[in-house]
Length: 520
Image: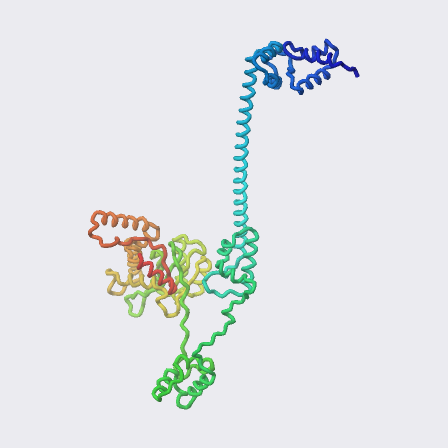
């Protein structure tokens, strides 16, 4: 390897420096020194703090690092020394000052950029934290929704409900297990308890380590303080079976003993003791009491063609003891007569034909309508029942000899027979009756303003036109009150639309309906 003296090396480097720097390629061609060696020398000189431009171009085109090296090299020089340095390097003091100002400006800009990047980094980190928190919240909400949905599908319908309801230990254990699974899957405890229909306090009580899942109300033995002893109960039985009282009822025994100055128990207590001892049975020639049939199921109609009611009424003919029979079907919701026929006999065949015609006229679909009637033979005939089954019409029947179970048909027949133009004399023939019934049906469906329908016609109720009519009436009354408010001491007349019509409602439903009407 060829070695160069320090002087020759310094002379070569001097040619690379201002004021007239020579390019590395040119210098390598002139001296025969490899370019890599020259580049290495220039790099070492730059590292020592001396300004060695990386190009032979004009000083305005030097690299920023070379300009910065000149600035650092002249930083400690006074004005005279700076002038001498500039003449040696072929530079102007103004150039160096401009480079220094540019360096300071670049540093300030860099400092500002660093601050901006730091602020942006903080904002980015804050935004990332917000997004992560939002993602965590949404994941938790999604997990909770899925857990609650699974819990809703698993929980049986008999859990929760009315306060104080008895729940078996197995169901309690199942509720605790389902709650634990839902909470573990991500559901909040109070949300899961709402799905179970149980209070949080109840589940906490069941979940205690020393708590028994057995409802203590089922194992508690409560003995009333005034309970009769076995000796007292035996005394009651002995007195009731004695010769003086064996033929008397407890209602007669108690006053008889009181007349003798004795009191052993009340009538209800004596009845209970005798019943427990199997000493209470029907005696005598009177018929034993018969349990009354249960009231038929109630039906609620919220639209037309949901519940129908039908019956047959007698119409006198000119021949004494001979009657014509009017078959009539009405819609309970709208009171519209949807079908009628007059025949000379009662027959399930005639009834079946009428039902088919009514279903066809009203375009009734299968399993759409319930048909209620009494227990007459035409109503329960095999042909009639088969027809109802084929049409998909659900039959419903009144209790035997209880006309109140079919009130709408009964009320319609009263309206029918108490019309002012109803003939005072029997009908001459069946055609005359049919003609009169046809006129009645037209009047009833299209002209009669029914009191139970807010005085709209059954046809208007059947087609839904009554809603607009009742709203118009409400507006008329409101305008009248606004024009002359002194004529009203309270609210105007209630023209609201009744959305529900019940057939044979239960006692609770009937009370609710009465209360709603009173409130309205």
